[in-house]
View 1 (spheres, rainbow, N blue to C red):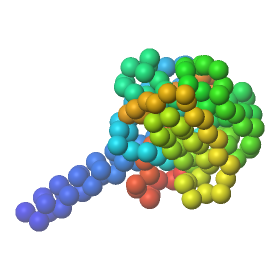
View 2: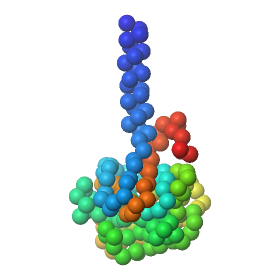
View 3: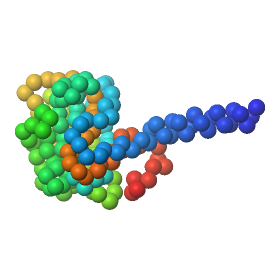
View 4: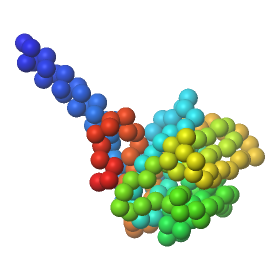
Length: 171
C-alpha cells in the first residue's frame, strides 16, 4: 500500500514538474501559438533562446484580431527590439540596446509588465537595472492573454514559467 501511495505521489509530482517547466518551440511562420491566460496578472517573466524575431503578443481574447501590444525581441536580424500596437504594425518604441536582444546559445530572461494602456519590457527580472522599453497607448485595453510566435526561418524557444528550479536554462 505504501509503495502504491509513493508511486501516485511521484506521478503527481512529475506531472506538476512537466506542466510548469514547459519549453515552447516556435518554428518558422508568423502564427501566434500557445495562448496563455494572464488575466488578473500585471507582469510575467519569460526566458527566450533563438537567433532572432521572438514575438510576444498581449491580447484581450484568444482571437488574434484582439492584439493590443506586440513585442518583437531581437527583430531585424537581432539588432532591434520594438513595441507596437498591431500585428506587424508600426513600431511605436524601439531599442538597439544589446541587453534587449536574444541569444542563440542560451536562454535570456525578460520581464514584461503591462497596465490598461502601457507595456514595459526589461531584460532580467523586475528588480534588474537594465534598460526599459515602454509604450503607452492612447486608449485603454484589458490584457487577458499572452501568445508567442516567430516571424522567420530561425526557430525560437520560450520558457514560460520556471517554478521548477531543475530546468537547465543553458540547454
